[in-house]
Image (cartoon, rainbow, N blue to C red; front, side, top):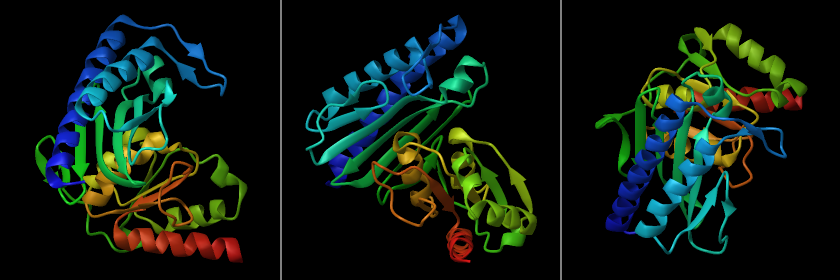
Length: 262
């Protein structure tokens, strides 16, 4: 994409996130009924209306792009440009009245992430990034920390159920013992902190690409590394995350790989 096209897309993504925020704030104040989807996860009218609001903005601004949304699926998988949208990531938090939910909007060009917007309207944070343009928090450019040793590291874990089933679980325990501190902020929050220099390593084994695509773009533009737990680049099939400062990502990846070989 050309620089002007990328900026046009980023502006549209930020506008779409704000349109979703208006919907989410409305239902946050009012309350919603909860339905259970076929995959046993909750969904509300706020999820659906927020995605419709996002789609309206994105389709008007970039009609040549397809959209893959959490609630209404993929409309055309053959286009070079693909929006990845989770209108209300963290619905479980939303319905339990905790503020750890967000709107995630990312854009892929020929399979590569080129921008991301992460908006947490009730928590009160918005971060965004575009390829080559840096990562930004409320108008200020942000970067990951310079932390390069496990002894200094702050680690955060999110969804790790699957990780408990193989040898990497014990290795995670060893890393925690070697680290400075362990937290479990979860959802968007620990990725925001990572991009802003407040955390050094984030580990999750059970995610969907729509949950993390925008966050990956942000962390990368903030100078961090963001792969799956095997060190592979993100794809539409990604299900895990290893994200961190370059030094900590490399150390954790080496230790996880060694644990599987022993």
